Length: 76
Image 1 (tube, rainbow, N blue to C red):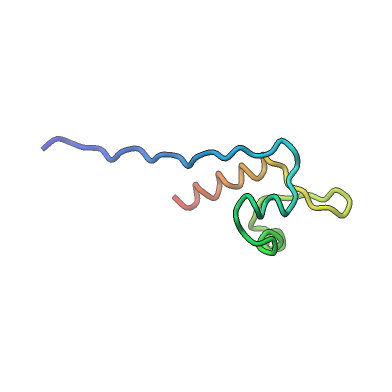
Image 2 (cartoon, rainbow, N blue to C red; image 1 turned 90 degrees about the vertical axis):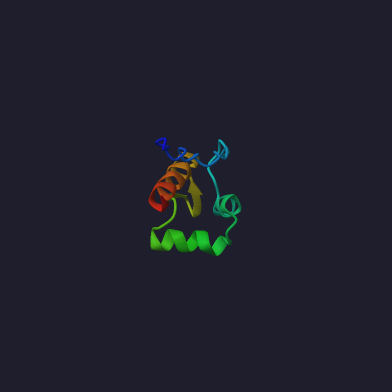
């Protein structure tokens, strides 16, 4: 019998992120989750890292992309 190797896993499609800082509403829409979930992730420190601009919460698109990469590697 021929030695067959399993096909290499295909990485998930890359979703282009906006070039501006993201709001919590943007992050919720990006992942298709309720806004409250984004705030829970922040309280529990399990979601993408955010930062404050005055009283406004923002997310850097690169930090969100890195968080997604970390989540996909943990799930594998």
